[in-house]
Amino acid sequence: MSTGRIVLAATPIGDVEDASPRLRRLLQDADVVAAEDTRRLRGLLTRLGVQPSGRVVSHHEHNEQDRVGDLLEVARGGGTVLVVSDAGMPTVSDPGFALVRAAVDAGVPVTTAPGPSAVLAALAVSGLATDRFCFEGFLPRREGEREAALGGLVGEARTMVFFEAPHRVARTLATMARVLGPDRPAAVCRELTKTYEEVVRGPLQDLVRWAGDGEPRGEICVVVAGRPGPAQVQVQDVVGEVLARVDVGERLKDVVAEVAGATGVGKRDLYAAALAARGR
Image (spheres, rainbow, N blue to C red):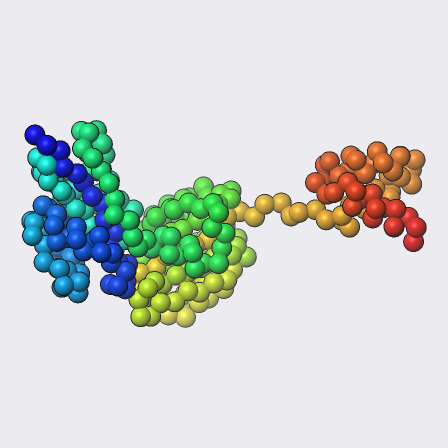
């Protein structure tokens, strides 16, 4: 019996023109298309002008476990099972993980047709650091649980990306401001790649006021800066300490070496600044 494959395919998060030629081909040729919402998939197929040749089945959070066996059998028999969510990449706060886990355990190949991602799109346009980040998905709905979850992220140094529902975003931003600090930089990214795309940037306290002006609509990502590191010490910040210690008898070179090592400032720059200050 030949072995087929499971393909996780990213679908447009807004603009249908983001659909790749590979996605179109997979939708047309796959033996089974497992869709989070078959109605939304039909709408996408219509907009793309694609007619699938294989079966289309529902594959959502309520039936995912029941579907796994059947989908694996298709792949084991040599077929291609295409997994798509309503938007973006399956398994990222969307169905698909249970199937991937089962396929890995069964030795069935799993691959991906990458493409649009709300997480990466929001991170890219947020204006916040992109070198290190983490995805936190949806926060708990209950206030106490949401506050506890954010409390566990107070020390997180990486940029954080969250999903949130429009009717909860104001409460979530308020909790973030209270727990993470009102001055923490953040961005609310709404309706990315769609006609009414909007990105609002600023400290959390400003975003709380923005959300309070009226319930935002559409798909929303919230991006929050990580915990700021200690402020970088400047030469001028420690010259006074050096001079004070020299005045009570310590050797200038020794003091400069010790202070520079402890604070990270340049030894030569600190020495030159101390000499200049003593000459004034």
